[in-house]
View 1 (cartoon, rainbow, N blue to C red):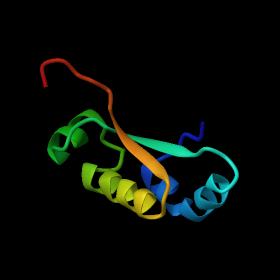
View 2 (cartoon, one colour; view 1 turned 120 degrees about the vertical axis):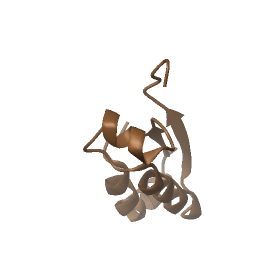
View 3 (tube, one colour; view 1 turned 90 degrees about the vertical axis):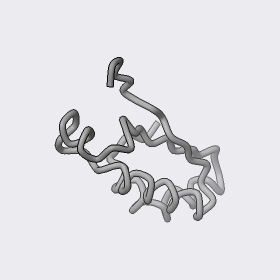
Length: 77
């Protein structure tokens, strides 16, 4: 499993496409919330939701199997 920032993963799409020609490749991107204000309060140094969704779109358009993880789950928010 490759774990990295969402923007880094999207920038490596060429490598992921080449890997997918030989192996099963999938990428899951975690999103805590669609609310950028909440994200900044909880995870101040992480990419905002729109950047994560843009990375997801880039991967899917390149033919990489990709999905969203709702994580971490914070009860009461």
